[in-house]
Length: 71
Image (cartoon, rainbow, N blue to C red; front, top):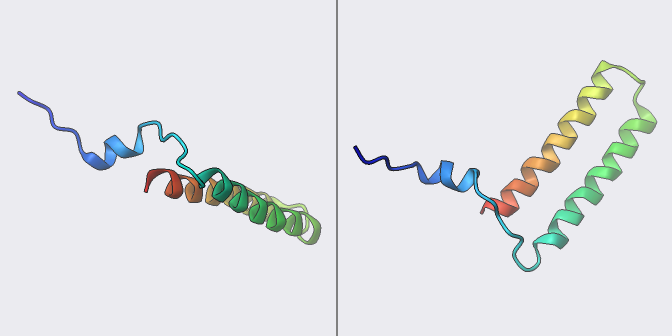
C-alpha cells in the first residue's frame, strides 16, 4: 500500500526558511504585539483574565508568523 500524505500536513510540519523580507514582517508583528502587551500589563488588573490575554496575544503572534512562513 502506498501512503500519500496530505499536502497541508506536509506544509504545516516542515521547516520554512525565511524568504527575503519575512524577517522584517516578523519583527513588525512582534513590535505591535509588544505594544499591546505593555498596555495590557499597565492597564489590566493582575488576574487570570489578564494572564489569558497575554497567553492569547502570544498565540496570535505565533499564528501570524506561521501564516507568513507557510504561505
